[in-house]
Length: 444
Image (cartoon, rainbow, N blue to C red; front, top):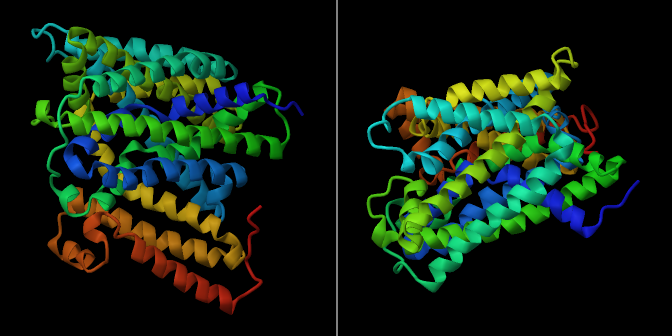
């Protein structure tokens, strides 16, 4: 087995970071900073737990469990197949990948278009055709992603963000404002729930495949070595994310005075960049969004294609899957950023709690000897609540369901799933005690 140098380990970390740091990572921290105002660092504390802590935990857990499918198999093989496919499709061609293309266009190209054609669908179509063509080309050779993403594109991206942040320190835009909405009442919990929207905890469940191939391209072999370097890469990502999120949150919080009517973090960053750099600020911001989104799109196309080529037993090749996901993502991206974001919230609210409790159960696996009763009941209780709540907020709009859920502690703070999950764990654990030494699955 070949040992990686610190330099190469760092570049593997940059590769993983490049796949994490995309559309949501850029637009949510500035918005959090502006809306939370003087409570920005309290809200930021909650945000990094769900937007940084959980994704890195997911990297560690997926590495130790030898993949998302094996992790989900603790519930049942059928659940593992269904849940894994849902995760890959939601973070991939149905949501995550299209969002990168739409956001890159909105922030990198649209500001430079003549007003006469902004409303036309043609510019977005042409841009996404080229954008996903490049992402498809990059994804065709996963072994080269460390050189292309880790060593070239990501360092440029980090440098550009750093330049914007330093400029905001040298010439401050304005003071932090008064917190708005839920940020004034419970900023920590609101920040935690906003961390869902980055999709990173779910994305982390997918990226293990890409990192494994990247490590093998560096001649790292052996299961223990791959797990070890994957965890090290995850820790590097965590440190970088915290630093970058802090920078973006600060820029958002300090730009309240020039972005009073901004609807999202993209608008906030646009106003801030224009204020700090004038016309060139839009160019800098466009490059930041384009690089970040392209990196993530490439990583997601690669991970999804690797997974589906495996489950299809290579009857459909990796290259064919890559084309399918790149092409379908291009089509979905033309729906528009606003529509994609409005669709992403209920989907993430339904999936995120399920992903979190699955990871937490794995951490506690030895406590109940991997009993299926615990896994099944925890996932059952959590999924019933999260799916029903998500549907109620977007489709059903039933006051009876809302009133019932209002009884749950932390429901108004976006964490109502915690009590159903604990209840499922308690019941499952009680059954485990009654049937001890039966139906156990080891954690390793």
